[in-house]
Amino acid sequence: MNGYKRQVDFLDWEFGMFFHFGIRSFYPGHVDWDNKDMPPEKFNPTELDCEQWIKTAKEAGATYAILTTKHHDGFALWPSKYSNYSVAQTPWKDGKGDVVREFTDACRKYGLKVGLYYSPAQWGKYSIPFNNAKAYDDYFINQIGELLTNYGKIDYLWFDGCGSEGHEYDRERIVAEIDRMQPEILTFCDPEWSPGIRWVGNEDGYASLNNPLVVSSTDYSELATEEQKLSEAAFLPSECDCKLRATWFYDLNEDTIKSVEELFGMYEMSVGHGSNFLINIGPDNRGLLPDADVKRILELGERIKSGYGTPANFGEMKKDGDVYTITHKEAGPTEEWKMPYEKNLTNCVMIKEDLTNGQKVESFSVYGYLPAYRHKKILLFEGKTIGHKVLCKFSPLRCSKYEIVINSHSGDYAIKDIKAYYVK
Image 1 (cartoon, helix red, strand yellow):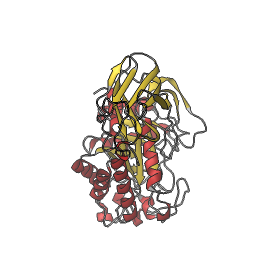
Image 2: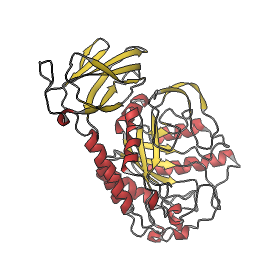
Image 3: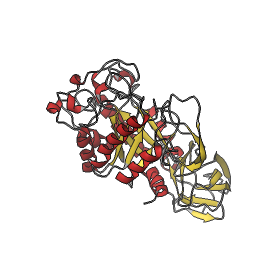
Image 4: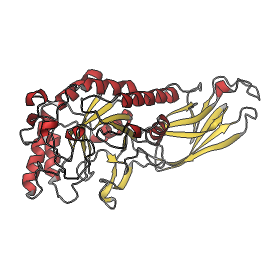
């Protein structure tokens, strides 16, 4: 599978779950780069159950999962030969445990794609310094090598650029080694390393309604003060990472769990704007997802299913030049549509573009035909990009037919699908 197809297929994953777990899970109140010591002796998740994590993700509707194998603090969740700060130095399972193994096994058991997060940068008492660039790159490659050769096929490698602003990596060497070890892998990283998936530019879970897939600059780190200009424009789908609570790692802040309403809005403005939605839960110091977090993420999954699981009763899409229509199956030939009101309300049109040859649509309009004056149409929505999917929301009404007009495009394009929904 070539790189472009992997990127396009990634957008079909749509919804993933992030799991920030590590030494920080045992030190509530600690934050990134605070340089506070976190001795490994406290790491002891006696009830660790990665299957609980992944089963919850599956039930919520997620298709992929990502584990923080090593965060900025340097603590490795596998017994790394290249670190003195890992699960091997802890009392958990007498230093013989391996969270990465349990996580990858759970993903495969429940059919989720396997993602591994790795932070190249690190700080604190146990860190490997940046001083010798080649030595640091050796360490980086050695640890990545353990992750990419000991746990079977890894679908997604997620690099965090935060903290690496002052170090020039030997990216060609690193990318070559990654490709050698996992030739089918997809990466989230600096696109100048390897074209893959780009950060949307915020950690709030939202993508812009105008969301081009080909970009000439990207955000790559929350510490960077400006976007990175690319050497040339590149096809780079975006991912919206966000967190269920106010913190990535488990902390004593259950009161910060977001509402279903807010989370559902994040879903609609990430997946619904042509990006992927990646939401984080921090497993607690037992090694389990907290009950309140599980309840909320399952409520979100049910809300997504109830809103977008079953489309309204419209027929197949029809094409006439640059005009596409879908007609309600119960809209008869008479002038006035006399069907029950509540039953036939809709307030959203979903449009998908065929990305086989790239993203081509540059502007479009959505019109709705009225229930009584059925020959009359009104403008409901105007947008620019479509891409993998765009959700066009408007106030509820009874439409006998929806008409989507492609106003401008950059070449041959194709619309893959159009559906209507009533989303409460």
